Length: 456
Image (cartoon, rainbow, N blue to C red; front, side):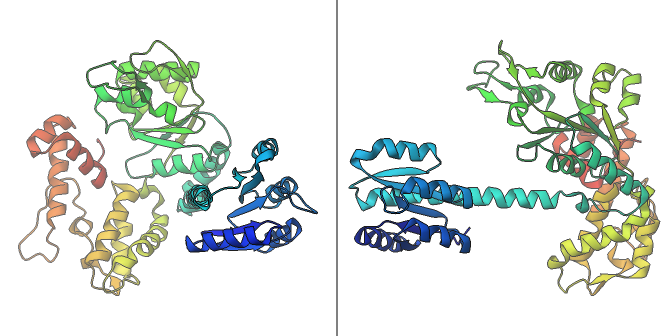
């Protein structure tokens, strides 16, 4: 498409077309005119305009024929037709053939400005959607899930096979291994890519609200339900729904989810009507759901419904050869934030990264590199730019350090270890841990994700 606001006026009446061009130019549009349809087709081959304003009655090639040719050569170009009062039927034919709208002569110039503004705004929005879809397709392409180790190459091959099907996928892996990134790669490389991917973290929403979030509700279903509300399943219709941390679903919601997967229909909370849905479900969990089934924490029938295509993501410690590749990627990502610029990483610093176990996996590695880039003094990341726990390897408890130690921990590192200690002492009872820490449960949940903690 041409630049924003590029319009072509076509009319065999020289006075009419020049008047329209003059009015549009005064409104800030780039407008030009041509007298015949054949010349328009030649212009389309060079650079299609955003909008064509064409008279219907013209010699040699009438407006309807021109419209058909424009839609064949440049389907993204909008066409606005102008017609005499007695030719309304022809204008309706034009709308059916793909014209954006029509104006009946004689018309006021204010009328054409209003219609043009609306058409150009729709063109702008369509261009944004195309750009976003292309960005999403590129961003979540397989090549952007970084790795050259055998576990990652096997993962790439599996994702390619999975993407083309409509089967339910269960992604399992420890916190920070990239479960959502894999879910996005599956969706945006599938036939459903043009439809929405809706994501929800089941542990981030209070249990008493999650049912309404997933299935929606009708007005009056409960206190505070002041209007009908679509659920996430409806929002994802025709696309994919990614349920992260699905192991946190209550037994009641597990039953309802099983019914949706079996029947491919659902009910809003408080409703008696069923709604048919076409949604591909991608689920993820950092818990061992097979073990959860054995301990009656997760329904066996739902587990087998979800586990049609299992994908197990490798921990970073099991693919340490990918660490240099990931470090380079994160350095490039955060380099613009560095002052002075960071151009690389010293060998001693890389050795510390390779020797560390990375309990928080790729997310923890990214956090470490971002911190080092921002706090480093350039031009390389040095060992002293890395957090103290990478030097001590004491990730299982509070720091033990001397005042004279060159690797004294930051407040962030002290917070990390203290939260980890409290979680262990409370056996991961998050409400109790949050009470001891003096923070609310949502804040604790964010800290757990940030630091990549997981139950041991």
